[in-house]
Image (cartoon, rainbow, N blue to C red):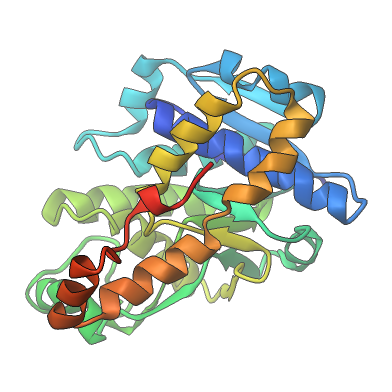
Amino acid sequence: MDTMLLYQGYGSADIINECKFSLLRLYETYKTHEQKPPVVIIYTDQPEAFTLYQTFLSIIIKKVSAHQIQQWKGPHNFVHLVKIEVIKDCLSQHPGKIIYTDTDTICEKPLTEIFQAISSSQVYFHEYEGTLSSPSFKKWKRFFETNTIKGMEDFSPLHIDLWNAGVIGLETAHLPLLNEVYALTNNLYSRYQKHIAEQLSFCYVFQRHRIKIKSATTCIFHYWNLKEYRQLLARFFEKNKEQNFEILATQSSQVLPQKMVAEKLQYKSYSVIKKWLLAVQGGTWSINRYKV
């Protein structure tokens, strides 16, 4: 069965930079392990941004127009519906196994183990985030205690496990379920416009069909909580705009986000007093402390 890595990279320069950096790390990781990277499929409105990368990676470009993207956002203009449509379109045209990743992800080791484990009864998401009834999702808990959503009649959504959908590994057998995910996301978002409506819908549908969900964190790092990293990537690509692909790939190891995420989260955990003391000493956390 064919295996493919899927991205949606459209719109802002920040998203394009994230996608390019993810490709650099994919190339470098597989090169380090002396393995051939999987075929990459990118849905983008800026194909020219990836011309350099096509020489070194097997990349299929799917050009999408602004009109198509807007259509895919659906009647409520929900950006995360585009992800569902992209996955549906890809699996329809390229049967096999795919790992969809958001652009703010990094391949840390070859994806072989995930591709091999994907089956009709098992899929992959990025990481487990807790049950919907936990204190972390108290607003959703209040919503579902007083609202009934079409498509969620089989069991209470408060009983589902929520997984981060920045990574989704699945296969052609799951294609019919994506229509359910799309319909449920539309119904849910029309009633409660929160950005995790699509993620919640994915989890509900797969768990309703008794499909096991596993974590992709053994292979993929997702820096969703480091939006400041976009500033650093802009500086990285501007500084190295004259460099060839292989030099870019090598130098990408100098600006990895893993340590930055850990240090930012540690700083956020400090008390107000400790943050004030650090500010006095010039120790406030900032993306500007990291150089390219």
